Length: 282
Image 1 (cartoon, helix red, strand yellow):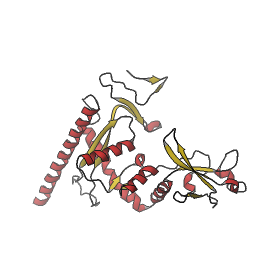
Image 2: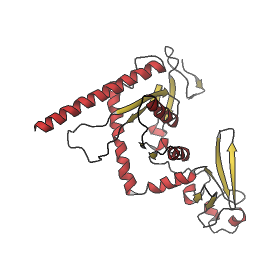
Image 3: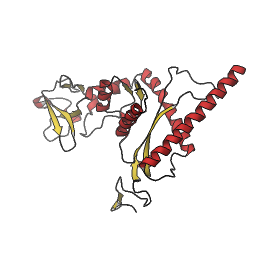
Image 4: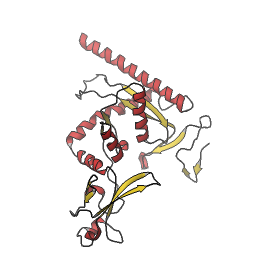
């Protein structure tokens, strides 16, 4: 049974009568859009201090520390929080660095990582442009002092803290008032009927702004290569059968994924000690 709204499938609707906890979900857009019915898994693995490229045939020395299975429609950020919490419950140390992709980087997650003395390393999404003018990256925003400088060099005259109870979030709205009236960049900056520009950003936008600047640095790009190994891990888990669960329900599927993670670690450990033994003999 599937629940549909006209021709549009509703995220979270279930399709398998024998497993009512299985949900339909999708991610991506256009040709890259992928959909599935079931659950979602968050995978964490270790990183080594030595980033030297491996020799040909040398097995990985990284091991899985957590596989958290969530509902299909759970957000990646929610899944990350659950994974870190479950690591603690399983007596794992809190990571000082966490390498992630763009889905996990927001101003709020960067602020939370800073409060927890953790470095959240990952690229931020490009600033959305909803105004048909300059996007937020063209503005210098200082959230702490609640000031913003526009592309023309004018300092904002007003900053309002908006608490959106409907969406459950808060943000800042900056305004430049009459400074926009005679600004030479006015037509390129805004298409509003008033001719005056406003800028809406998250509470911790300065952290997001800083990350977008860091992304242009070659050192950041080189550092992000350490995350590439997780793609191979996902492929390895897929070959072990992760994407085709034979169990019903979230709890049983979660347990099955833990067994797959354990099998993956055992395989890696055996390959590593065999390679080390062969190397020493040679």
